[in-house]
Amino acid sequence: MNEEISFILDTCKEAMDAAIAHLEKEFIKIRAGKANANMLSSVMVDYYGSATPLNQVANVNTPDARTITATPWEKAMLPEIEKAIMISNLGFNPASNGESIIINVPPLTEERRRDLAKQAKAEAEHAKVGVRNARQEGNKDIRALDGASDDLKDNAETDVQELTDTYTKKIDAFLAAKEAEIMKV
Image 1 (cartoon, rainbow, N blue to C red):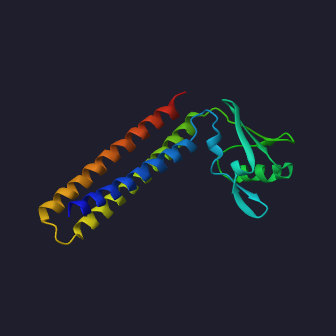
Image 2: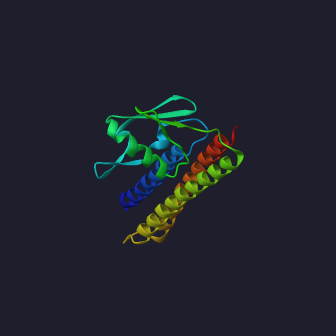
Image 3: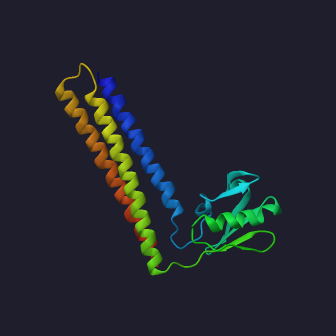
């Protein structure tokens, strides 16, 4: 019986780890004023009829703290890449020099910083929902165990709640760090 409970707890922990990992990926996409090649990781380019990630059709670099360049491996892809960046809703205005796409990352205004902080808060809330869903699944699995005493089930549910509290605190810590990074001028 203890093996089943420890398996349920491990499954909960994995799901909560996945929520944290997803949050970290989403936080990378939220810029804090400094150019980062990962800012374009969500851009999908129409590559001969199929949606392909930008980093699979072009070399994406950051030559300095305010510039991102995307150099396509095929010159014919320049207009497609430029169009994909424009419609990606990242707030960038790409410019082409005939060989590559150049994106100037403007310094953040106070209003934009607040918007990004709100976006970070929303992503953190999504992660918390993921953690709570994992808790709910774990508790449901624990209650469904046959042959386990009520005390054993109660103790296991307490363990799941402790895991939930721990991961919620981690998410809050990540959010506080990201908000500080965004709001730093």
